[in-house]
Length: 62
View 1 (cartoon, rainbow, N blue to C red):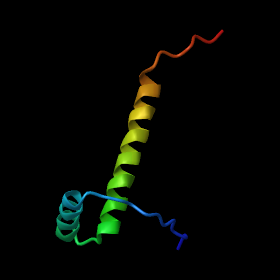
View 2: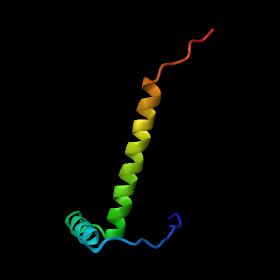
View 3: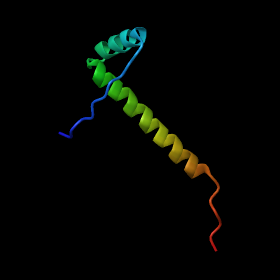
């Protein structure tokens, strides 16, 4: 398994409680839930960037 990067995250207690409840509902740890959410956001952003690139006008070839 790939080595994981650890870092300190300061988070509002109310947000932590929301994430904890969400994680429990999906049978994940809070850490796993945060990683899942971040991965979804990164993949969505990549998809939007790709879609924007594909819809941009293409230069005419000679």
